[in-house]
Amino acid sequence: MSSKILIIGACGQIGTELTTKLREIHGVTNVIASDINTRNLDLVNSGPFEIIDAKNYNAIKDCCLQNNVKTVYLMAALLSATGEKYPMEAWDLNMNSLFHVLNLAKQKTIDKIFWPSSIAVFGPTTPSENTPQHTICEPTTVYGITKQVGERWCEYYHNKYDVDVRSIRYPGIISYKAMPGGGTTDYAVEIYHEAIKTGKYESFLSENTSLPMMFMEDAIKATTKIMEAPAENLTIRSAYNLSAISFTPKEIFESIKAKMPEFSMSYKPDFRQAIADSWPSSIDDSVARKDWNWQHDYNLKEMTSEMLKQLRKKYNS
Ligand code: VAH
Image 1 (cartoon, rainbow, N blue to C red):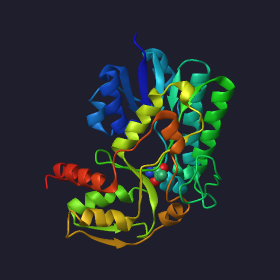
Image 2 (cartoon, rainbow, N blue to C red):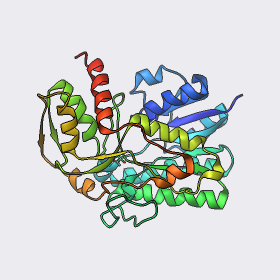
Image 3 (cartoon, rainbow, N blue to C red):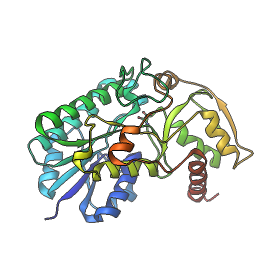
């Protein structure tokens, strides 16, 4: 039986598009999508799918053994805003799911892991502009703590047990296919949907809150590139800084208004403002560019153009 890929958390914002891309590359039957439920029926019906709780070690192990899975993409997590509402659940899911796949690799059941980290590993004491790969990481969110600790464990398992685990610190990701859930950067997705549906949007972040962001196409490109890179080229086994564009709610509003002059925006910061304020405004990803030739493609104008084009089709407007 040919070796297979398992995506855990495949119904999520990134997992949905990662499943499609990996199936294009490796063949539909070689990529098993899994999630805790079948909420995304398009995905469920698009190829091999299994219901797997990322917290269930035996369920993951059985799937890997029964299907000769050798590569796992662990995309399941509770994000920053949800993690503040349910801290122990976030710790449980984000950490135990990682230990499950790291231990499966340690015992050689699987060969390779992708695990997403986040710019949420940084905190208010981190240099905010052009944040370097190696710097102070004192996250103030549960989500950020799980990602910081997760990075330490990934590096430990690589150094101690030669586990081939690879990770990147995703910025906020903007996409039109699957909605994000429970994130602080979700406003940058919601705004496009509301521009099409209602012509107005109330931002839960203040207008000058600059955050590192990326169009989903670039995030998927980075994920496949790091997994295809020769192991000997990788000098970072915690997680690579990754960057594309940084913008504020005011700037994304203006990029939409340039295409839709009637669009209006208001601001009503909520608890997520404090989370956003603790994160950097821009990231230095020169190490990723050097080690595995990372290069983003989309700027804000190009992303806005594509988002509005695709969402007009989605809403038939
Ligand atoms: C969040 N979208 O908002 C995620 C991401 C950098 C932000 O990790 O929690």
